[in-house]
Length: 215
Image 1 (cartoon, helix red, strand yellow):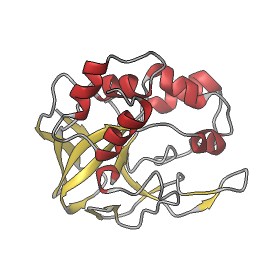
Image 2 (cartoon, one colour):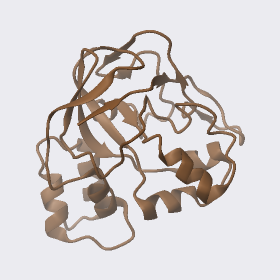
Image 3 (cartoon, one colour):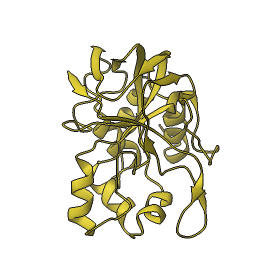
Image 4 (cartoon, helix red, strand yellow):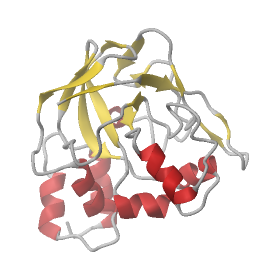
């Protein structure tokens, strides 16, 4: 699998319409970007309780979901450019069914490893100015995903995201997302299997234990 990264994005903290501070609004970077254990150089995380961990260093939200969001919620001026959903990597032609927990990719000279799906939060709704977005994302599984950085390096817009090693073939991002964050009651054995994957994020394992103590 190979996909072109059309933009690499980073952002600084700014005020959302309700006055709260967030770095969800990101912008494409010019030239090469340094990608290290903390993510894309120059990118900021305001909520250090939920963001900024090594297993969540790089965020990808599939670019084709922008059109889906507009179909669901009408014109969304906040979706004005790559990085508008808080993603570091802006990529068309892929979704959560084509990526697996533990997949490793080369991007420029860096190697990144998929660790977990993204859990949507109220910051997305405050940013977009629409209620119901989180509920729609949860129902559809259009969640996005996080990567840890295995080997630091540099990358730029136009580089390809190349799969170099497949992770857990049975565990797509969408399956993991629905299991942990979906509305239905998950099977205990499935949760235990997901939590035991060697490359799964410790943050996702924490959420599994917190949401489903019997797993």
